[in-house]
Structure formats: C-alpha cells, structure tokens
Length: 493
Picture 1 (tube, rainbow, N blue to C red):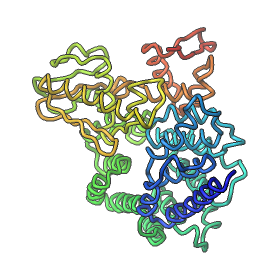
Picture 2: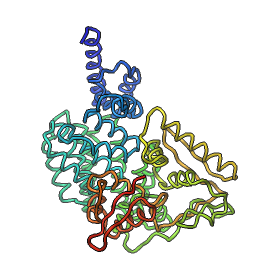
Picture 3: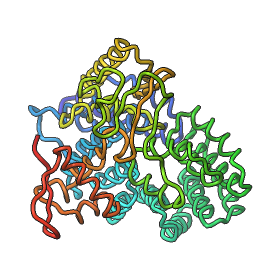
Picture 4: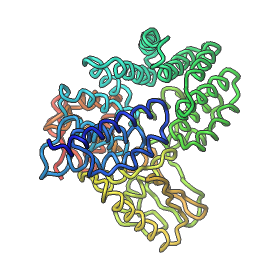
C-alpha cells in the first residue's frame, strides 16, 4: 500500500467515525450532508460496507446500493464477502426488494455474517410475519454479539413477541432489558423505546393507568430529532386514552398526524383500534381489502369474530367506467382491458390502501427474477408508470399515479371504479407468500410439503392450502404425490 492509499484509508476511517457519531446523537441532517458529499470512487473496498451501513441508517438507501452494487452484482469482480452480501440485502430490504434480499441473506454464512439473521427478521416484520421474525431473532441472539447490538436485538425481539401476541414472553424480555439499561446514558433513547413497548404490554392487559405512566417515561427518554420514536408514543397514548374512555376522538386526531408524517403502518393500526371501540362495516372492509398481508387479515378474523368482510369491494364510485379485477371476470370490465403487464402493475398499485409501493418492490414484481440495479431499475419502473398513465389518458380513465421520493400511489377518481374480491388477497393474489416460500431454504430447494410451508409462513393450514392452490393455479408450483405424501416444487421459469 502506497502513501496515497494509506491517506485515503485514514480519511475514510475518520469520516466513518464522524458520521456514526452524528447518527447516534440524532443529528441525521448533518450525517446526510456528509454522506452526500461522498465520491463513490474514493471509497476504499475495506470501508464500503461501513459507508453503505451509514447510508442505510441515514435513509440514503439508493446511495448505499450504488456503493455496494459493483461488489455484489458485478460478475467480473471478485466474489463478494458475506458482510457485503448481508449489508446489500439490508439495503434491498429497505428499498422494498424483499425477495432478492432474502435470496442474498440465504447465501450468507451465519458464522461470517451473523447480522444476516437480524436482517431476515426485519424482512419478516415488514411482511407482518412476526412468528418467523421471532425465530430469526432467537437464532441471532444465540450468537456472540457486542453488548449494544445484543440489547438492540432484544428490544426488536420483544417488539415481535408483542406483535405475535405472546405477551408473557414479551414482558419477561422487556423487564430483563430494563434491568440492563437503566442508569446508563448510552441507552437513553433505546430505553425510551423499551418503555413504550412496556406500555403496550400493560395496555393489552387493560392496565391503562400504568400504560400512560410508562408512556410518560418513554417520552422523557426520547431526545429531540427522533420523530418516529415520538410518533409511536403519540400513537399508543391516543389508543390508550380512546380505549379507556371508549371514545375514538383521540385516535381520529392521531390519524391526521400519521397521514401528515406519512407513517402508513401506524395509520393502519390506528384504524384497527378505532374499530375495536366503534365497529363500522365500511371502515372494516376498507381495512381488510386494503391490507394485502394474510397474517393481518387473520388478526382481523380473531379480534372481530362476529363480523366478516364483504364479498366484493368497489374502489371509487360506481359509474360507467369500471375495471373488474375479480378472479376470472376481467372481461366484464367496461373499459378497454390493459395489456397483461399493465394489468399486473395496476393490481400492484391498488393492493395496499395505506402504504404506497416503493421502487424496489415494484421492480421485483414487474420484472420477476431480475436483480435490482440502483442505476437503471428506477428508470425502468418510471417507464412502466408512463405506459400506465398513457393507457388511462387514452381511455379517459380518471385516475392519478402519484410519486414521492420513489414511492408510488394510484388514486381512483370520480368517474372510474375498480371491482375486487375477497376470494384472493387483493392485487396479485398470494404473490408475497409465494415469493417468501421461494426465498426460504426450507421450501425453495427441490420438494417441500405443506407442513414446511406452514412453518415458514406462520399461517393456519387452511390458509396455506389456499396459498398453495393459488400457486398451482398460477403455474408457479407443481404438485406430486397424494395425501400425506403430497409435495410441491417451484416451476422453473
């Protein structure tokens, strides 16, 4: 190594430490300012993973992908390290390319990159598959970890246990973490997150006064600059007060804040608790049809056993122009039928009424089997959007496709409607569940049975049977054998 290389290495090391300190202090804008000055060509290979990690934590996902893409996806380059694969997968997860992320994570050596288990857990959380997330967190926590990383993982583990409705175990983990963290300045913010989770546990047991007390402690621990942390506290304060007083007004007020902050999952959950206070069939249908996660729909079935979503749902107002996306009824549409690729894109854009679709997820679903390229894939997605907009304009269809920082949303206006059905998941059927099976080592290689699929998905046997049938109908899977000897495999495309 010559003198120039040594100087560049030293400069990289200093900058990594500076930006890391800024992020830990909550000075995100200052960290972003430093990272956006980077010239990727000046980043040494030894520091690439560190800079990509900082970019992910600062929300500069595209920049992080561009740093690592040549090392992970350039076939003429040397074989990527497990740490490079894991960090690139974590960036893909943040970008919405969950299937590609999981495929890379499954190629990682847990010994060389134990963080791959953590990132798998995050992917499962994003898909509302909390039982699988719990399994991955438990495997990760068995590894020798630095104290801070271990405690951070324990907090996320407790959060997943809580979401999986295992209150007893979640409470035990939180009490353990509180004992380890209290009185230590370096854990101030994280302890605020723990207090908020502790408040959730108390809320679920009906201890509303104690819940509010813990939320007050949480608020005191969150430093300025951590808006999302504060938003969670506001959410559970609103839910607690609304439930205790049996009046939905605090939740309705919080929903305005969630929309303003574009925190879509909080908006979804707030509507769930609003319905528990005062049931409304129209809002229930909106929540059910507008949530493409089967696990969440099963949660609705458990908590609202006396109610059921309607058979069909109409997006927009009934009128002359209607696109019928119910199974097998596309020809009943009163508008010209779009091409198959545009129909698929349309389905994807309307399947989640809360969360807009980001570029990575759109790319992976429009171009299945292709790797996301941070330099060219966003352009290819935009080109598809232009084609869909042209189809709408040419056929006088009143809908808008909005884009904000790489997130796309389709809005249906007054003279046009879309008909969908509850027979399948909204949009493209059980695409997410099938892709999860395809990316998991227990179900991706050669033959697998229903029990393996049920373990991976964390769903009931009846639901898994529907998913596998959908996979067979869509020619994604093939089946062999009968009865208990029935096996499935993915069809090569």
